[in-house]
Length: 343
Image (cartoon, rainbow, N blue to C red; front, side):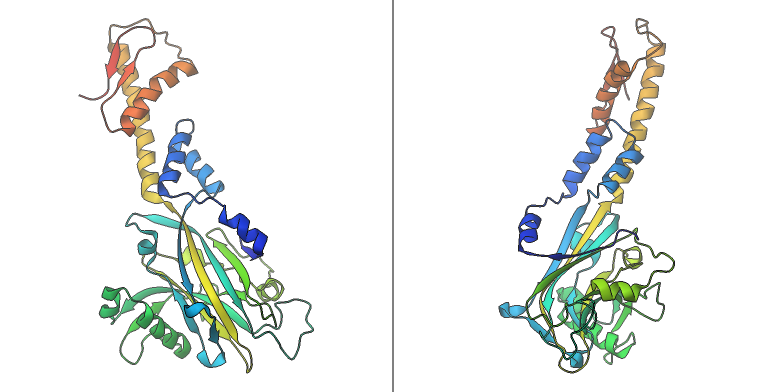
C-alpha cells in the first residue's frame, strides 16, 4: 500500500498538532552526529529515515479578507496555490532529496445536492483538488525577476484549461506528466465532503516510497476516502520545480469554497550526508594511521589485543579533531606518549 496517508482533522487534533515538533536542519545534523558516534554512517542515515526525522518547509495561501474563494465549473482548473521553486522554498542551494509532500486543505462545497444517497460521504462529490508539477517557465522574465506568482498562476490556469504548453502571449510552461497516466498532467489530491456547508480540514501525505499494487482500484479508493494516492508525484519532483494546487468544480450549482491550502515539503540534505560519510572514512583511516604510528613508536606498553574500551578511547579524540577540522592526537592509554595526526 505504500505510505499514503489521508486524515480528517478536528479541533482536538489541531490542538495536538500545534504541539508537534518539527526538526530544523541543525537539529537533524546534531542527531546524525550523535548516532555516528556509535553506528556507521549508513545505519545512522537509515535510522533517521525510518524515524522520518526530516526537515520541513511549508508554503500557505489563504483566501483574502477572511472569506472563502468561490470556484464553479466556469472557472475550469483554478490555480489557487503555486509554491516557489523547491530550493527557494527550502532556503538552500545544496543537494536535497524530497521524501514526503503534504497537503492541508480547508474547504467545503455548496452544502446541498439533489442526490445524497451514497454509501460514502465522498462519493457523488463534484468539487475537488488536483496537484501539478511546474518544471520550466519561459517567456516571462519580468515575473521571475519580481518574484510575483500572480501572472504565472493565470498562465498555468490558461494552459491547463487549453491542454497546451504555450499561451497566446508566448509564455511557455512545462507541466510534468503523470507517469501512471501519460495523457494526464495532474494528480488527484482530495474531494470535498458531499453537501457539507462547514469547513473541513483534509490532510493528504504522499511519500517517495508510495507504489501501486496490482489489482488496486484507485477510483474506488477515491470514492471511499476522497483522497488520491499520489503515486509517482514525489519521485517526479526536481530541485527547480514548483507545486501547483488546482481547485475544481463540475456541473451547475456545485461550488468549491476554499479557505486555506498549505503545502509541506519534508526533505533530507544529501550534501551533509555525503560530508558525514566522508568524515567517518577519515576517522577510520586516522585510526589506522594512528595504530601504525604507535607500532613504529618506542611505546610498547599497550597489548596487541585491543578491547572495545581502548578502541573508543582512541576513537573519541580523533572524531572530535576531525569534526572541528583541527589536527588532533591519539593518546596511548598506558603511558604519556601520543601520536599526532597530520604534520
